[in-house]
Image (cartoon, rainbow, N blue to C red):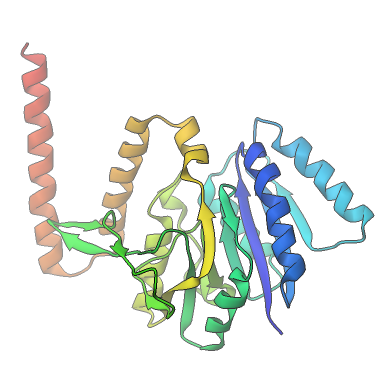
Length: 277
């Protein structure tokens, strides 16, 4: 029997929830298998909680038991919220879903069969015909240049990492890895770190072109509530955390140290020039 637990972290995503949850429930009604939806509200300050409480009551009136809602007492960030949701899941395949992602029909029918293979850890859905690529360049892991895939492709591809916003994971393997590392809070690089650790254990990370989703980046809560400078700072910080945490090869570490010191020297030089005016 195919079964999936859908884990949705939410922070101030009331509008996205109202728009995309009905579409998700419609897909699940047609899904030939068992499913549940787990929503973790991360201390939202908009009307998300009011909406979720009302939604839960409506579901209970219909006798539905496939909706679980977790209310965090305070804001813990994406990683911890997702870990809490996965911990509550009853099925062994969990699908992480962002509030700004619309799931298309048959998405789960294409994702779930891959987990019949014992070495599959994660399978990403297709949002934009790109593969997650990681390249160690100038002492850093570069994940900002995904590989374009032909729209005629119908076979799954190996991927360095998959998005935490629309991908399925083997729950037992997830728990064995300790879940998403909260070091990366509040966002970015979490799923890259997780997939990297899975690959190191010999588990596969795949991307399935036929499992379609629509990721509405323009509705991103991160872009709405955080400045471009702060987002850039977190991305660069987490890039450092990834290297310092995961890279053990001496040659790669020497390359990183050299380029890290070079970056610091450039920043100090720029700061000196600015203050000299």
